Image (tube, rainbow, N blue to C red):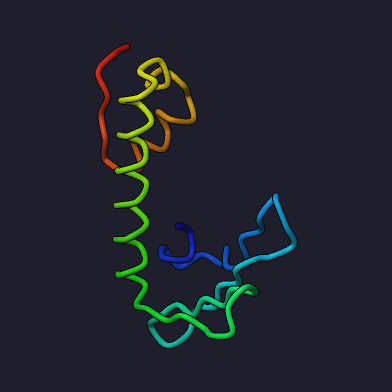
Length: 91
């Protein structure tokens, strides 16, 4: 979440299954998200977005590693886990 640390990594998230995307715009202490598949924009504070993002990452990592324990040894899973403050026992 580089943008939350003062970086300029704002842009968009593309989807592989279609041409839709979500663009992100940092403005006045908040984050505006504009999905191409909705006729509206979403807005929240950066703190709220980061908190929700970390919660999502934690929950999904826990779910996936519980279902597939050997993933706890995957270097990408390990890197995400460290960033999200998770530790998995050795598989």
